[in-house]
Length: 204
Ligand code: URA
Figure (cartoon, protein in one colour):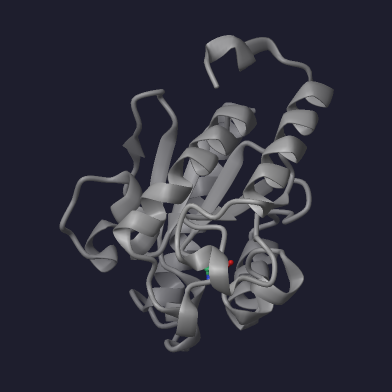
């Protein structure tokens, strides 16, 4: 795909994304394809200003073909709702890989590499203004850093195309950390979402 998608219409965008999803559903570029029930392409609004990139589909996502629909996804939904971010209208959700890794292990570098051109095509078509890198796997895919997610979350970065990117905690981590005390992971997640909302208001 080249820069000719700059002025494509909404209908053309949807058509290309639909074609891309079909290509992904036939993909066998890496080992993960052998174990999948469904590819997990995306959820949400392809016209959204925010794109969220998670790690990889889990069991529920593999069965339903939709990202973030298990326990972690439900917690993510709760956080989004609390900040008035509509999962249907305000955000486009996907993962670093489109097929579930066995035993929910972290996707391997060659698996992420094999899937990357699909993700890059989605970014190019959706043209988000903000990308949320949800968890360390997504962070490592997009930022050249050795910093842990705890050190780097909440900071703004910019990619070569001027898209703002922010690392945020993965909801699986928040499922294991219930506290809402000041500086706890859930408290920090709320802070980050407030920060994202205020950035979003500037873009409107
Ligand atoms: N965790 C992820 O990173 N992505 C999903 O889609 C589900 C759980």
